[in-house]
Image (cartoon, rainbow, N blue to C red; front, side):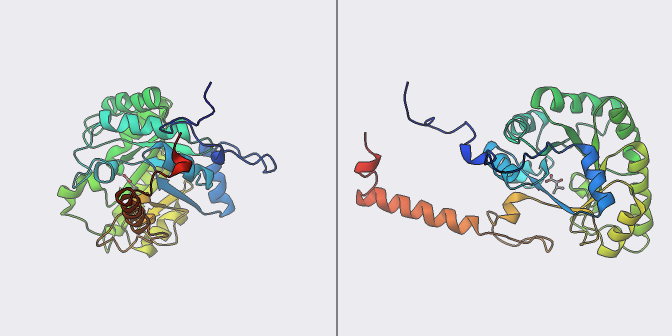
Length: 288
Ligand code: KIV
């Protein structure tokens, strides 16, 4: 037997384990999220699309990981979330579900995989749960998605809804626009109430005015998760490449960058290439 670690990684490292002195962390379950709302405890959700980000965010105590259809842009390099398919998202979801020990793993249903009928939504959601190990799914839409949410919930698939700006409908909505302004506030509240009544266990609100989001949050028993919806939501979500500064260029106003991963990676890659060019890597300590 070799005493070397696996040559290409693939096994979660010991650093993702709890130190034995730390209190054991429980798996996050859907009822915990509602209990946190009742206690007024705010929480953070992050996207994750692979093993290391899932294990790292899980170790950091992020309670909910979303395998977003934003993988379309952030993994597959598309301009929008529209092209990504179920078959492209399932392997990413499987990697995240295998690697997160505590977090609740949410699979985003991609465009075209649930809108046609509740039955289509159920078929797609079951694939994410059976083939990828997702704990629940997210879908975009308000009152018009109530039949889908009802069937999924009845069939054992917990649903996180997503209202306000819904990127899969960007062509209907006329581009990246704030939703729920003026008369739109009434529709937003009606959508939020409709998804709650249909059985959704939480609802994402994207790009809506902060005061409207706060009002919706106060009206619902289920947690609201904001992205560009102000501090009045029960939880917040960000795409990890935005939050950690891997994405460069102009960012949406709602993004806060907590690190400059792009800068760190460029510098490290340059240093590595310079060492190779100079013959200083590999050194004797890297050589068998
Ligand atoms: O796909 C995604 O990442 C999302 C979040 C930004 C809410 O839907």
